[in-house]
Image (tube, rainbow, N blue to C red; front, side):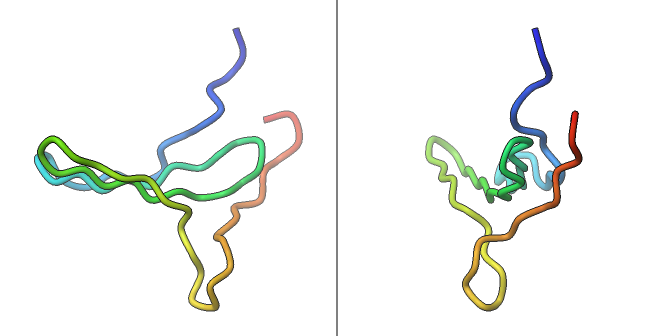
Length: 60
């Protein structure tokens, strides 16, 4: 089996968790936050409103 599609690049908290995940295929960054029984995932945006994209190396 190949590598996971998403990698966690940042994590903070224990009960109120904030994480940043990067899609290895597209480079799109996602912000994930959960507190208690609820959570949410959304694309991480740059100050100008565009989606934050991390360059993805070929073959990764």
